Structure formats: C-alpha cells, structure tokens
Image (cartoon, rainbow, N blue to C red; front, side, top):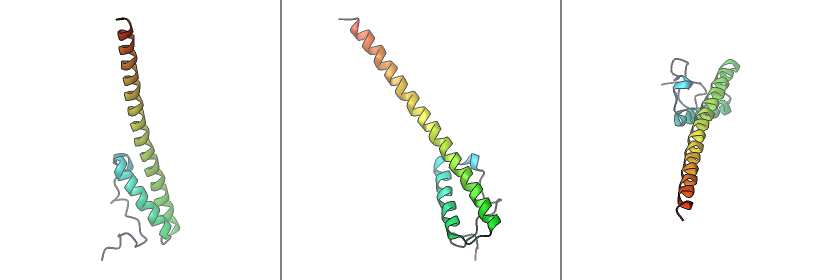
Length: 96
C-alpha cells in the first residue's frame, strides 16, 4: 500500500514535488489546499511539518504572483479601452 496518500500524514517526497515556479495558478492553488489539509492533520514530525509549511508559503507566493499578473493584464486592458473611448469621444466632438 502506498503511504503517500492523502490522510496518511506524510507529505510527498521532494523528488515527487514539481518546482513551485513551474506551477500554473490552478496547480499552485490545489497544492496549497492539499498542503493545508496535511498540516491540519498534525501527524508529521516537526521537520516534515516545517518543510511542508515552507512549501505552502512558496505556493501562496506563486498564487499571488499569478494573480498580480492577471490584475496587471486586466488593468492594462481597461486603460486601453478607456484611452480608445476618450480618443473616439474627442474625434466625435470635433465633427459637430
């Protein structure tokens, strides 16, 4: 039986973990949720818990990076739309 299943109180070994910087937002979010659940079980040694906590912090930062990037894209799109609307309004008001 595989001991590295959810609920076994063991985090996946570092060889099994994908580097945080390679994770999509969804992957990082899901891994963070699983990390929190494992920590809440409280069945790991202190060293294992600390290592998992550190990975959780890195996963949270990765999620924040993805969200900040998405926010910047939305703000840029809105700013571009507003500039286009302002330019159209200026061109339209000169025709009257």
